[in-house]
Image 1: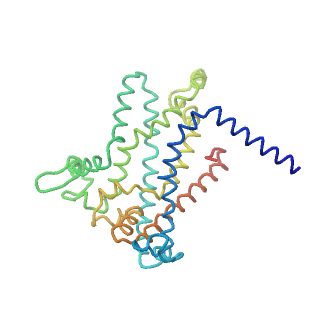
Image 2: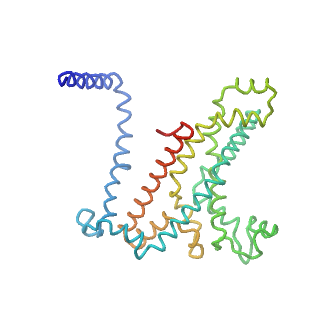
Image 3: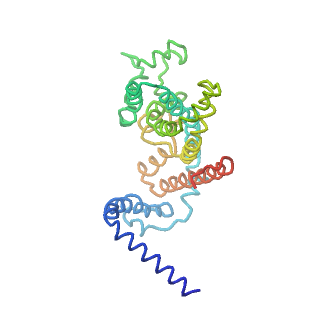
Length: 321
C-alpha cells in the first residue's frame, strides 16, 4: 500500500511537470501576478504582528515588546472603548442602510436596461450611470459638498431644493449636521456605484434563455409576471452570491469618502472603524491599537461571510463554497 502511494504521488508530480512544460508560456505570464501578490498582498501581512506588540519605531516590529492581547482589551473595554464602540455602531448602521437602500438600486437599473430595446439608447443610458464610478472620491465629494453647501454668499442647489420642500429646516448647514451625514453618505454611494454595479445583474439577465420568456407569453403572462417568474428566479444565484459578499463587507465602510465628508461636528454619526483606525494609528502614532482595530474588523467580516454562506447553503443551495 505504501509503495502504491509513493507511485501515485510520483505520477501526479510527473503530470504536473508535463502540464507546466506543455503550457509554459501561460505560467510565465503568471509570474508578474504572483510577484505582485507576494509583495503587496502577502508581505504586508507580517505587519499584523504590530497588533500584539507595544510598537516602537526605533526598535522596529520584531524588537518591540510583546503585549499579547493588551491592545484588543484596550479598544474593547479600556480607555478607547467609548470611541471604538461608537465607531463600530456607526459602521454597522451605515452599512445596514447601504445594504437596505443601495443593494436593490443596481438590480432595478439592470431590469430597466434589459427592457430598453434600442441598443444605442441603452448604451448611452448605461454610460451615463457608469460614469460616476470612474470619478475619484475627491471629485465626487467635492461635487456633493458644492451641492449641499450653505454659506453667506450662496446656497447649493440641493440644499436650496430641500429647504423649499421643507425636508430640511431653512438655514441648516447640512454638511455640518450629524443628523444628515448618513443620508448624504448613502445617497452619494448610490449615485457613484449603482450604475457600475448593475453590470453584474444585467449580465445575469442577458444569460436567461429567451425560451423562458416566450413560454410565459404563450401562457398569457404579462411584463410583471415575466419579471416575477422568469427574470428574478433566473438572477437568484447571482443575487445570493452578491448579497453574501456584501454582508462580508458590513464593517468595511470606505474611509476615503467619510474622511472627505466628515468633520468634528459630525463625528457622532460619521466616525467609522476605518477612520477611527486611521486617526488612532496614524495621527496619534499608536500603531498597535490601530492594527488591533483592523484585525478586529477583518475577523468580524470573515465571520459574517461564513455565517451568511452557511445560511444561504441551507436555504437556497447556492453558496460561495
